[in-house]
Image (tube, rainbow, N blue to C red):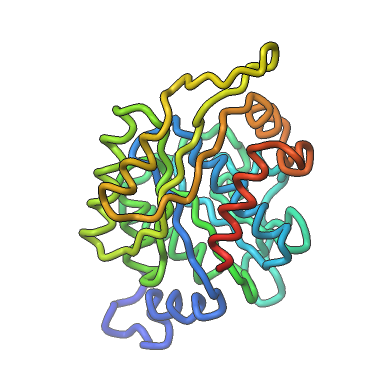
Length: 271
């Protein structure tokens, strides 16, 4: 900082400005996972798309500082720019869906971001204060795996955020989910519910349902903690293909079981 903290105007207090910015956003959800590799970012993206398809104004904020993938999954290219008020313009995927990510601020997308906690806290706060989100019905926040700086910063800055926890059915993933649940309890963050991702795979040759990672573990964990179970997302290789190509899976496979599952989750959030 270039000025002494005692000389700072109360009106320029960054945490106060963040609180004021959030008043324009009705509902805030942070999508978390206890461990990596459970498809959390795919879930974040598809929840946002499902809500936007219902006519809601949705913002997607990527706070995975070290591994931001959302722009590539949404097919967004180029850099974020500023408006006449020197506010950052989010990138628009559609008229109802906009997104902000650290990757869209990096000239070289493959550069490593080597930051400690305070810098990550400052960046996330800027994503709230300095971005012209406008009036939103939903802000979906995609966080990195685990219970580190990023979800803690969200809990501190966005007091009314609710958590959606993503898991896969196998026991080792569920053990980490229980840590995420306890994290939310510790920081007094309400948990909206659990999602079981990669839950079953239908063989394209014989049509038989194969439980590659098991099934039902997410629902059992939700029940044991007295939490809502939001649904199962089947495993579909086309999700990976669409994510790599920057295409909307729900648009390409409108009648699939995966799309129906995300629409169902969006309906629960809308209620």
